[in-house]
Length: 340
Ligand code: SF4
Image 1 (cartoon, rainbow, N blue to C red):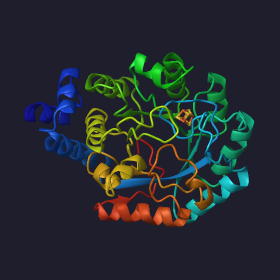
Image 2: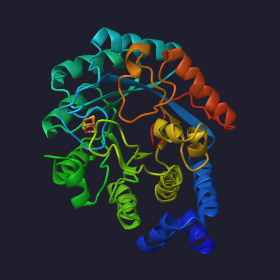
Image 3: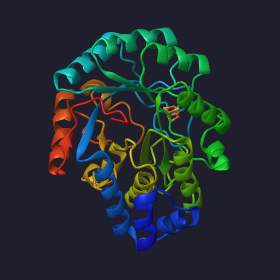
Image 4: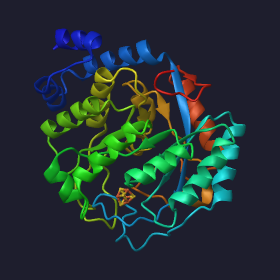
């Protein structure tokens, strides 16, 4: 295995069988994490980019079985931020030197393409890179949002296992999800995808195919998080995914896609107090503090235990900077595109 990993450091290829073996046992974890960290340093140096995450609506028409803000969750406070609130959060981030904001929401029809285009162009006037994470859209809608100035789009495939995908996503189709991702690439977005690690019924084989899918798509960003059962969902009583497995999927992704952006996700911190630091040591080079504001960020409860949720945008950015410093890394000062 040592030889295979040394070869992968140079070629950025691993066959499916080897990936499955690495995911199925803990005995090579140290070697794998060191290899991923080596590749990360080689391609991304010690720079960690901060993206300000604005969760601007927790209203969603979809009903994904694992999600704490799915349509059928009745006991959560639904909210929407208006354009002024979004701009105010972004403005605070700009004052802290942030160069990218991520606009994330459920699939909320209130935010039409025209409304989003207005918000995007106002954010571009602040000289920000704009990432959208607002779900499945038509080709034309993606085109209009790109023309309005959006730079990046995050749409996790969640799982490439067709049967599991359809079980987890009532009335959604994996073919449409794939169409969306291919549209985004074709339209010139920096395209992010990713998966949930540890879903009930997910196998190492299936996760290996997810990782190979990221490579095949040539994803520009990959976001990975352990599955954490959320209350009031059909999966509330299931066993959650492990941090170790999520870190392994992350490390393998870094090995195969050496120059992409990989966030250390807050879901990892929900499972371990140093989750994001551990992720930075296993291939991650991005952190995404929540800057939605104290009144809202704790309502976007995709899963329980989302960390640092009751503090102001300035505090969450300061905290992210501290994580970067403590990991012995430097905060990026650019917009942090893949090919910078
Ligand atoms: S995962 Fe996304 S699309 Fe699915 S219910 Fe949650 S917010 Fe909506």
